[in-house]
Image (cartoon, rainbow, N blue to C red; front, side, top):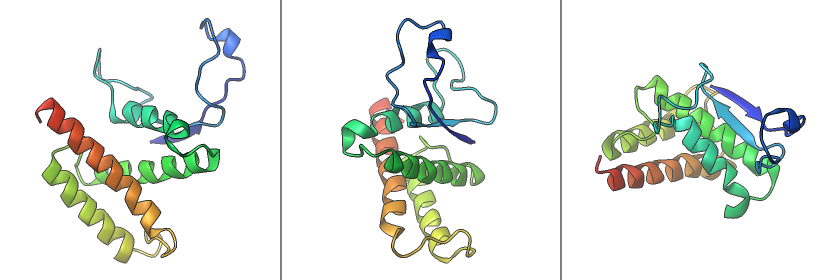
Length: 143
């Protein structure tokens, strides 16, 4: 997964009528194959996360440094899920199990994987929020 940051530089050459509403420096996650959907009306989880990231300024996180931090945490969470065969919008049971495993991995895994005590709450709350939202989305879809 690639983490990039939006720049509107040169937008006039993009064959769009107006400058995009995406804030400068907004993080953008892209799958390694550079695709955002699996077909018509089938967005990938990265596209859904990018929408969530774009809503951060209106959701109480107006600072670009916060956007980058959230993007990095969600990227790591999504990569962890993929390594364990769990989708971001998987079942409630699988997501809760993955969240428990992620907490254990971040608390007692390799030194590189561990969170500092001062950032533990922030790092764990972001995947938890994504998991809750995913569960709600799955429930709404009848999954």
